[in-house]
Image (tube, rainbow, N blue to C red; front, side, top):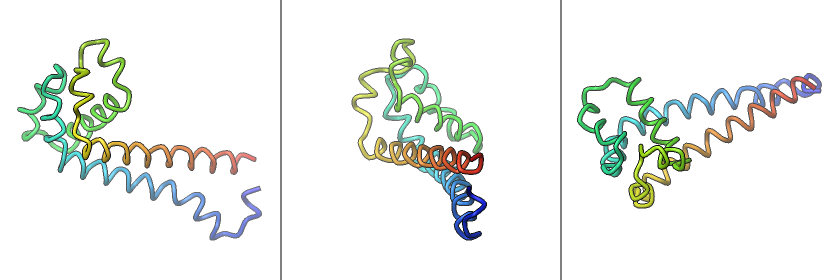
Length: 126
């Protein structure tokens, strides 16, 4: 089915998820460099994140990137972390809204990439 479409549409359908994934990677890198320390400061009451603030200036890009991904996951779905005692419910409720908006935008972008990629995959398989 997809092979009957004009080549420019096929290129757009298949290339945009790759381009969006690259944008998402660069955006994650920027956010982990620019805002991660401030986000971790807002989570001082959480046992898992409190220790990372001292080591953060000495870390290179990969551990910072992974820490940002962990932070995004913990704030997107905090219940398991709260049950384990890793993250404080007070910190989750009082997380600064400007950083929460950045994390929601990044999560939305990742959701668009996943849905678009799945649709393109289904179109190719049909």
